[in-house]
Image (cartoon, rainbow, N blue to C red; front, side, top):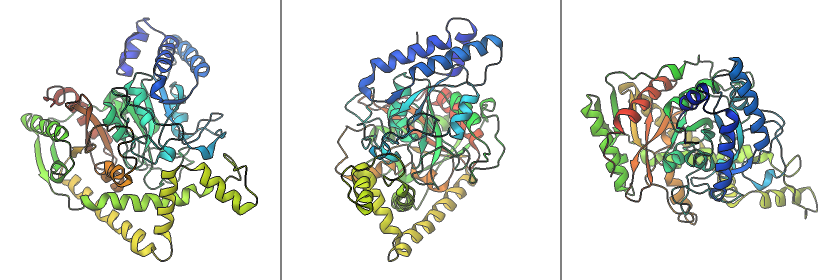
Length: 481
């Protein structure tokens, strides 16, 4: 069976009687088994996927199949699916199984998606390389000695390596977009509150968003359309109506586009990434779009602001994992205090411990105003400046990451270098606006290069239409370095 790049291709083959959903599942299960060395999946639900496929085949035959019939999907190990293990790739949740199904996952099932397994990620979604997972790193298919990005690394590799048609990840500061860039696929972070967070294990609640990783813009649009919308179980989700994103992919003739000047003059930016981005800019200008360089004065403040706020929220959210109620419990505890200390010390990995400690520090009475309160003010400035630019321009474009996929172990001893991998992705997260990462070529080593598109809040329809235009008529003709 050949590789499919979109659900449309799958549905055409199903309609022609050339394949069945059951055969499609067997194809993906075979790929997962053959590529187990990439460590993308922590658990494969083979028998369930077969049963779901048979049920969907019957619905297709009866003409009652949902929007996602034929789409085989993997779930990042932070999404609740009733009766299935849920660990956030952490030792501290050993043995835990979800008691309910999250809203986004349930909406996929309601439209006849086939769920094939649970995917590797950075522990509690904290990382930019998938190296903090308790289960070891996922590996980039193009070079297994390189990272796939993080934290949704296993989800991106699964799509890259044709283990499923799409994956559902989570994006706190770039955790869908950066691995999508490293793996040469498409990653979408919606507007904050566009998709319910009910059933998503919390890292930083005012940042976390569920987002799809796909091979086509059309599939990203359809998955967003299915998962988005109000939810009685999430008081923070938006009540904005959900457009038919998958039916609104016709671009305008001309756009006003800004690119942040400093992102292309940044020390440490790969020359290949700079050249590929400039190629796209010139292609857009050649098509008659207005493309201007713009200034954003807060670039140097974004990563510190992001990490102060997210570690603070993480220190609060992760307080519930204490060895008492569920998950890992230290066997050598002697009293309640030692149970807490030993269970958390043994159960959490080093990166998670580091972020809990940092968050506890910035929330402490002596430093709350000096760090946390100040970071909230800077976040407001970043949001206001971003919103102002997005009133002047339809979209902002910038690289997804300053480098292509780096080698496993290359940055693990330097947390600051790892944190700076997020420098281009955290802006959309701090501002709460949607962003999508698109592959725009390869570097001289053959590694994928990603570029982001940002738009105003709840303007995903326009952003997706432009993204489709980019992938079809700009990137295809741009000269890769």
